Length: 234
Image (cartoon, rainbow, N blue to C red; front, side, top):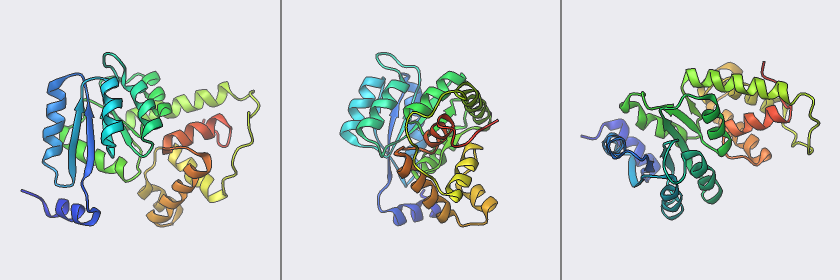
């Protein structure tokens, strides 16, 4: 039975969120499909069992969101993420994996992933994760966020002596404030509360930041900002 809040979301949006599921284990794909099929505002448009198939399907189906495993045959999820973001930049990608290695997390974000969840996440949390990234939020569980911030700090220290390669686009003072809070793992609601502005204003600032830096996701913006020493994370 469709819940009233789900029906309202579909009515407001007009079309359901189109999702592609990518995992080399059929049982996991089936579990995710069942969890998402119960949601009126989400539609599973395809499934892939490896990275190469995922790239082909994403190019053809143009999904809104991809649930992507990291470790797969033929092509891994990070390589597939990179190719999908090149061919379908608007697609949001959530890495859903058993790997909590910092290197996998960092490489996934650099490849263009918007979220990174461990497979021990409760299955009923996945629909809200899909909605969140589709609305422009970054999605990383707290333990992984701490590792990501630590990696940013290491990168900042390692590159302290490197001169900037190119002139960087100028961000406003307010955009820098928003970027610093994004770097702390805060979502739009938390940023709005901290800066005493509306969530829509936060969304506008994030969109302007991404346009100026010519990037696709909030986490990419943080990586770029640390690399170019626009901000420092300690």
